[in-house]
Length: 302
Image 1 (tube, helix red, strand yellow):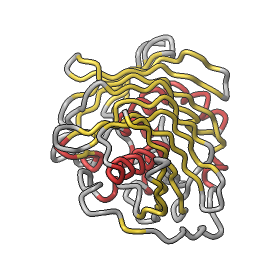
Image 2 (spheres, helix red, strand yellow; image 1 turned 30 degrees about the vertical axis):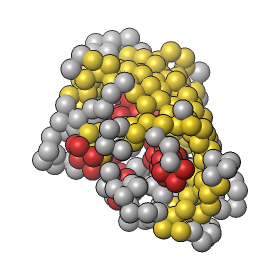
Image 3 (cartoon, one colour; image 1 turned 60 degrees about the vertical axis):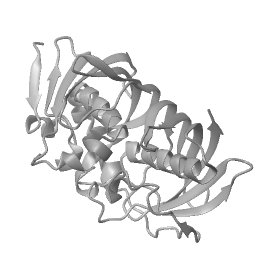
Image 4 (cartoon, rainbow, N blue to C red; image 1 turned 45 degrees about the vertical axis):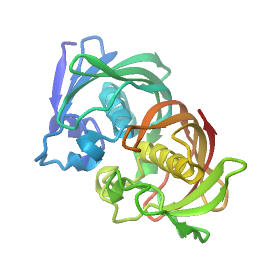
C-alpha cells in the first residue's frame, strides 16, 4: 500500500487516546506496513493542552517521549486490532536511552519499526530525533487486549494507603503537580538505600478523560514516572546526585503493578533530575481511577 499520512484528527480512528493523551501531530504509515514515522511540535499556546506534559525549563518530561514512540508504532496495527475488537496495551519497554532534553517547542521526529510480530505480541524498534540529533532509542513491546475488557475495568473498592509523611517542599517542584506521582513517603531506610512512596490515581486527574475515553486507565509511562519520582525522592533523602534505581509498584495488598530495572537518574547543574536510561519496564497490571499504589525503590549510588 502507498504511504498513509494521518493528522491528529484522522488518528482518532487509529488510537483510543484523546485530547492531551493523543500526542503526535502527524503519523505516516509507510508502504509495506512495517514502519511509521511521527512529527510532533507542542507550541506554547497548544490548543490540545499538551504543554501539560512539560517539566522545568519548557522541556518535555522524558517519559512522555516514550509514550510518543508507542503512539508512533501502534497505528500500524490498526486494521488487525479493529477486526479483533481489540486495543494495544504495552507490556514492556526496554533498552531505553535518552540522549538529551527536548524543548516542547522543538519538532520531534519519531520512528517505529516492527521487528517481531506474533499477532498477540508485537515488538517495535523506536528512535526519535530533534534537529537531526538523536533524542532517544527504545524497544517497545505491545500486547493485545479486548476492548470489552478495557471498558469493563473497574475496582469495587480502592485499597487504603498506609500512613506516610509529607514530601518536603521543593523535591518535586521542578514539574507541575499533575506530573508528580508520589504524595507521601511511607518508609525509608538509608542504610539499605530503600524508600517507599504512596500515591492515589484520582478520578479527577487530567489524563483520565483521554486514556481511554470508554474505559480509563493510568498510562504505563506515568507508572514509570512514579518509580522515577520515588527514586528522586530517595536520592534527595540520602544525599545522592546520580543513582541507578531498581523499582516496582504494588497495590497496598502487595500485588504487583509494574517492575522497573536499572532506571538511571542524574542531577543537573541546577539540582534537577534527568532521566537518562532505563533497562526494562514490565507492566503487570492495570490501574483505574481511584486505585492506590505503593512505589518501592532501591537506589545504588553512581
